[in-house]
Image (cartoon, rainbow over all chains, first blue to last red; front, side, top):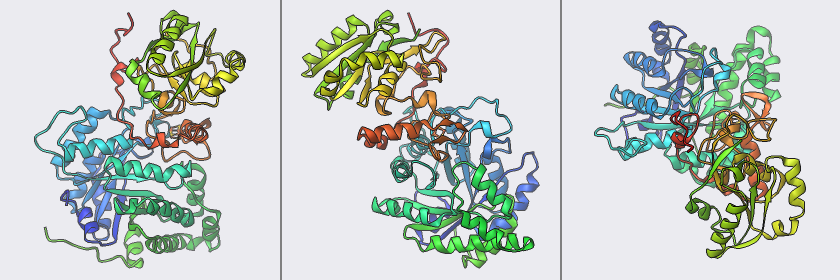
Length: 309
Length: 216
Ligand code: SF4
């Protein structure tokens, strides 16, 4: 064990992992987080807290993690390179580790143009792959990015994201290999609707033996309505929503669409579980957290493993 | 006016390491003016490389290298020499290097670092080609600049938002990393993308370095 992470422990024990996701509020209200935390608590092994997702100002990920932690959640702090240079990133990394957060997800971040402050200056001092290797050097070599040494290292379980549906497809396995070489311990993928394409990517991953060097969690998310699925298809960068998915939601009476969305999500979980090299799922039910218990239960993934610490 | 200085010789020698024969290009515009890649520097570079066992298949100093129409025309008369070379070493700022990469299907090595555009982007009118980062990395990106043309200045390949050749930020902007990927594929150099590119030294760039000009 490199860290005290519950997620690492679950994965090391060979259990099929379940991570969830929580979006902090666009305000200083801690109750929103407490409410979501209570719903998720017994159904996931760790919960990602987004870091200014879609470049909209929200409560800082690390702060929301601390509130969730009080409710008994294990958190994965998300950290993007959009708003902070390497100095600020390293300061936050030390801070979150000192406060007892055990996991980090290293991201480049959605471009500021998408958010509510498109006039902001984007930072992008380093990219997500460089962030992974910076955290790894801090943890394993006790070294700052500049090479100077520190007394107490941040013991973080290091994650990164990958999108099997982005282009050029031929580069996507190579990009995963770079993240693994940089030091990623686990990967959470983009939301999967096109299972065939995901399976093709996983084959490439296995051909290079990467599934043995990094833990891969398949990204899944329920869709509440036909409109939401369409929005994902046309407006969200890097998504691949096949027409068959939209047709399936359209094929049921209006009041049953959200039920069908849940069923679809469970079906996808069952399909990706069968793919060699997938060791868990990352369930992103942002703003629909109350459906998480049902999905996890129907997929037969409860109770979650508990370890005595 | 684009202001550039020659890269350390050690860097240039690393770039051309596997190449037996090299074609040299300089420019009579800015690079001549700044003494980084005019007639004199091209002649000197020729001798330097020959002393290190490299064959120089030919060389040319173009009037305005950043003008792609002109450069294309001019390089036509050097077809044979260029074909005989393993690569091209361009002793100009980033705009000139990218022009050559655009008009010739051959590996292009940058021989200079661009320090400042003095407010103008040479003859490139349609888009930013150079952000004056002071540490030219066109060597690793098929002669196309990701600092100037990727919305997130990414150095390790396309982000997760690149789809259908377009940048996630704007469907009217091509994803430069798709362009880099395509070009490296054409040149048989996709392995260049496997390298883990370490964080950039922004202190030598105009956007982040001290406001006191690095130029003297
Ligand atoms: S889509 Fe391409 S150009 Fe746009 S930010 Fe991503 S890598 Fe850069």
